[in-house]
Structure formats: C-alpha cells, structure tokens
Image (cartoon, rainbow, N blue to C red; front, side, top):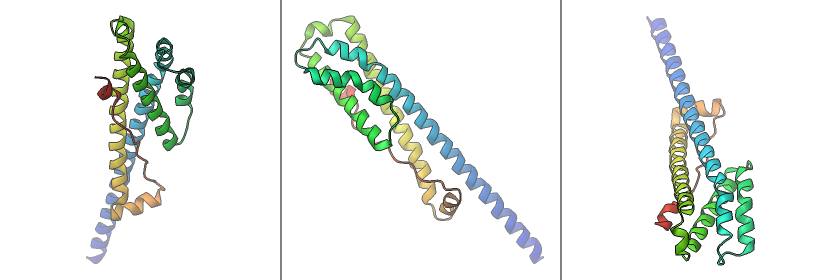
Length: 179
C-alpha cells in the first residue's frame, strides 16, 4: 500500500514539475515574442527619422549639430546594444521628435502642408505602437519574473538557468506633448 502511495506521489511530482516547466517556457516564449514586436516597432519608427530630419532642416530654430544628430539616430537605433543603452537611445529619439514638432509649431504654413501632416501622423502612430509594445513587453517580463520568484518554482528556474528579464523603462508618449 505504501509503495502505491509513494509511486502516486512521485508521479504527481513529475506531473507538477512538467507543468511548471511548461509554464516557464510559455512565459519565456511570450516575453521573447513581445521583445521581437517591440524591436520591429522601434525599427519602423527609426525609418521615419531621415524624412523628419529633412523636414527639420527648414527650421531656423534647430541648430546644425542637432540636425546631424537627428539624421544619424537611425543608425544608432539599429545597432544592437544592452537594454539600458537602448532605453537611452530611444528616449533621445523621442526627445528629438518632440523638439522638431515644437519647432514646427512656430511655422503655421507647415502645419497646413499635407506631406508634413502625414509625416507627423505617421510619427505619432509609430510612437503609439512603440509605447504599446513597450507595455506589452514589460507585462510579459513581469509575468515571467513573478513566476521565477515563487518559492517552489524558483528551484526550477535555477535548475534551467532561467534569469529574470529587465524592464524597458520609458517616458510618456510623444503624442501627449504634440496634441
């Protein structure tokens, strides 16, 4: 009788171990997928930088150094970097967008221009997608990090060398400052 009880307990432990491992892999996959979506949205936003830099060249308020930095931000954003550096680069892009659109407010003839209006709308849409992707990634990372800290499950995380993800810190959206 005791043998059957021990056999049942061992089977139950194996099933619980496999279920916990499956949950870890599911959350890990979700976090990696959210990161890929975030990177795609960041790349799409970076594609708008050269066009915006060309439009910004018409503004007398913006100095030459800023315009050169803005034009080269696309290459900076595309380079692989640790997450903390990546956050800084992306924050610089957002600040540059804000600076360009603030300078554009001094030029009412530009706001009537259809191509500039479309560019501004595309930048705002791209920035919104980036913000949503950041929230989705941070949510997936939070879920994964939470399960790695639960007492019996953290042993599985240590066993399979699953380390917690870093969060992508970010400021408010560009659309809040423009509108």
